Length: 130
Image (tube, rainbow, N blue to C red):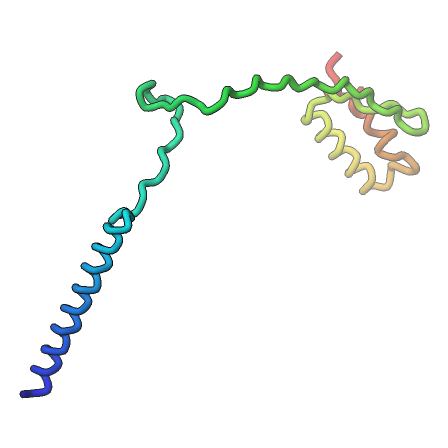
């Protein structure tokens, strides 16, 4: 017998033995009452828009939504040194314009000892519509 023929014959014997082992395992599982296929996954939860036939009854009723109390409005803290604050409803355009003016004033050195807290409210009042 040639080497190739022996290899083929050995492969057939191994395949046959594996087949027998597989069959024995299946019959043993069936004898023990074990399923021959893996278990099915649990059913999916109902999705919004599903038909009532597909939806499942919830296990327990959902609690009513909690009402969230809105906190009381917090009054703005007074500005230091008696200066007035910039009103909160001031538009971004006005604030941006005042910021550019402040940067130019500082760059030119004409601001002196003035701070933004002093300059800002004055600028907003200048640009605010009457």
